[in-house]
Length: 288
Picture: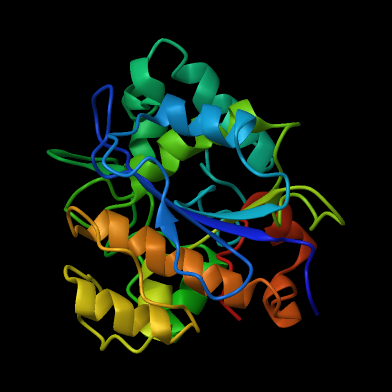
């Protein structure tokens, strides 16, 4: 299988507060073997700018990997927010709900959602664990159990505590996804198109693991290691960066992996992905 995509992008995302996020990085490569390059290298992106870049500047034949979780667990309880009458029925409605509740939050942040009296019951926040956050590590999507089976270490996106939490990224990402509806699809909520761009959810640690990085280490902070990891995906050495940080190298390595992975038909049809999951929880591209 060879998809129609000719460009491959990866975005390392951030749910941090403030007008600009140093944790956001964008890498792009073309079909072939040339190393990915950073888009606007050295620029400190905002989430609004990312939305505008995706909407207005993205090459039309690009598949874009977003390092964020686009939905909460649904399958385990039959709802995102069990017991809440307003709990949305699918991913599209979830994105709209989050965006509407947070309409007054600046910079596409999502503070208002986790402060909502009904929503907050489901989250673990600093100094405030909701009464509906289950004991232990929290709830997980079906594909996150698949991540664990690959010896990765997923976090519940109802957990908003700790350096590795992903919930804030998920919520801010949902606001962006809602504002891209009708302009840019996200697999598997939307089917793979015969032409045009497409978003997919990625997990940057998955690319690092597949490149050969040992368990317990997933961050690249030097040129030699980055080139060695890129070579695992058939990429040529990269042009030197002014600064090697986790965000830039995660995005570059993920773009190189996506270039290889996008032509693997089994990754577009994972065994565990059902129609219900496709409309409610979504799926991490690359998880079998």
